[in-house]
Length: 618
Image (cartoon, rainbow, N blue to C red; front, side, top):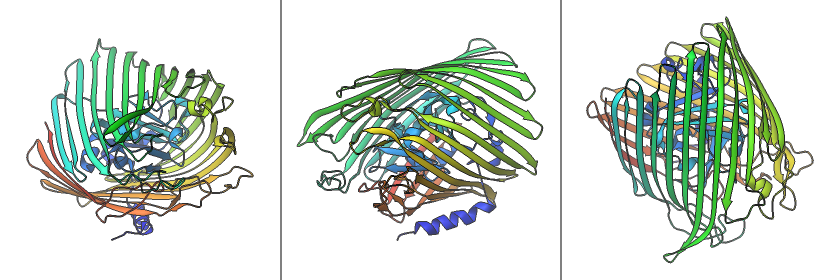
C-alpha cells in the first residue's frame, strides 16, 4: 500500500491549528537553551525559532538514528545515500549541510576538507539532548551558521547513581547494545556510555556501470554498517564559584558502499570529539567561561573484492578550537556578553593539498534586554581568517508579549560560510581566490502557550550571495545566488491522555543566478514541503504511538530534469513497562513498505522491525 505524500501533508496541516509546539510539553517551555544566544534563555523567551529534544523523548520515539529522530521536524530536510551509515546531508531552511553549524558539547564538528559533518556516525544512544536553532547565527558563531545551528549534548549525569542498558534486534540482522552509568555527588559528577551497532544493511545503490547512471558500478549486494562508540563526561566544583568540565566522544565505524577500485567500496571512519570547560561565577552580575575543543574526522577508504582488501585513500582532518566568554548582568533584565573564538583547521591526506592548514580568530558582542513586554537581542561579530581576511556579521531580534500567552517575534541577520579546503586547495579543481558565501535573512513569528497546548508559526526569507559553484571548466567560483522563502508550523496538545506533536515546513528554494540556465529552478535535493505527526497514548503500563511523516517531491539536479517523487511513511511503536526499571519496546518502521529515494538511484529501507529490552535505574 502506498500513501500519497500530499494526503499526509494535508492531514498534518489540518491538525496544526488546533495543536502546536516547540516539540516539548508546555511544562518544559520554561527550560533553558544555550545555543540560541550562547547564554541560558528560556524557550518561550527566545526571539529566534528553537526546538529541543531530550533523552526521554528519544527513548520514547525508539528512533534508530539521529536522521530518524530529526526527520520531518520543522525546517529540517535530509537526504541519504543508501541506509544506515551512508552519507547523509542535512538541509536547514534550504541551506546546504556545509551551511549548517553542528556542535557536540560546544565543539565544532565536520570535515575541514568538505565542510560536511558525519551525522550518520553519531550514535543516538550517546545523545542526551538536541537543541535546534533555525536561522543565521554567524554573528555569534562565525562561519557555517547560515541556515542555523544544531547542538548535540552527549549523555549527562542525573541525581545519584544511575545505570542504563538497552539490547536491540531487528530487520537486516540488526544487533545493537548500549550500557552506561552516571553519578552525581555534592561537588562532582561523571557519566560514561558505551554503544555498539551492526547491521547487514540494504543494497545501497540501484545503478549500473554506465557513467552518470547510479553509482557508476553494478554491485547488487547488501552494504552493511557497524559502529562502536564510547562517551565520557565529568565535572567538578572546585569551589562555590569555580567549576571544571571535560568530555570525550569516540565513534569508530565501518561502512560498505557501492564503489569502484578508484573510489573504494568500504570505509573505516572515526569521529573523535574532546573538550574541556572552565566556569567562574564570582557573583550574580558576572560569569566567565573558557573552553577548548578538538574534532578529529578520519576516513580511510578500501576496495574489497574476492576477499582482498586494498587501500585506496585517506582523508583525515582536525579542528582545534578555543573560546572565552564573559557575561555581564549590569541591570535587571540587561545582559552584555563579549568573547572570542580561535579555530585551526588541518588536513592530512594521500591527496596533496597546496595548503593544508589555516587559522581563524573571531570576536563578538551580544546584548540582551527585557523591558516589560518587550525583549531585544542584538549581536555583532568579526572574523579574521588566514585565507580570506576579515568578515563582519550581525543580527537583531525583537519579541513582544501580547497577553493570553501570545508572543510576536521578528529577527534579521547576516551569515557567511568560509570556502572549504576542497574548494580552495584540492588538486586540479580548486580556486584559492574564493571568497566566503554571504547571506541575509529575515524571520517573523507568532506563538501562543497555554495550559496543555501551544503553537508556533514562523515565516522567513534568506538570500545567499557569492554562492560557490563550478564553471564550465569545473573550477569553483563565487558565481551563484540563491533566494529561499519558507514557513514553518509546530504544535503540541495534550488531549484526553493523548500527546500530539505536529510540525510542517514549506520551502521555496530558488536558484537566482542571473543568466544561468538554472535560473529560478529549485535548488537540487531540497523538498518544498514536509511534515510530521506524532501521537502517543499511555494505557497503564502500556504505551503506544504512531509517527506519520510526509515529504514532497524534489529534483536531484540543478537543471531540474531528474524528479524524485514525494513520499509518506508511517511508523508504529509500543512500549510495555515490566516494572520500575525494565521495559520492552517494539517498533515497525515504514509499515506500508513505501519505496522511495532521497538521492537518485540510492535505495531507502522498506518495512523494518526492531525489538528492544531496556533497563533504567530509578
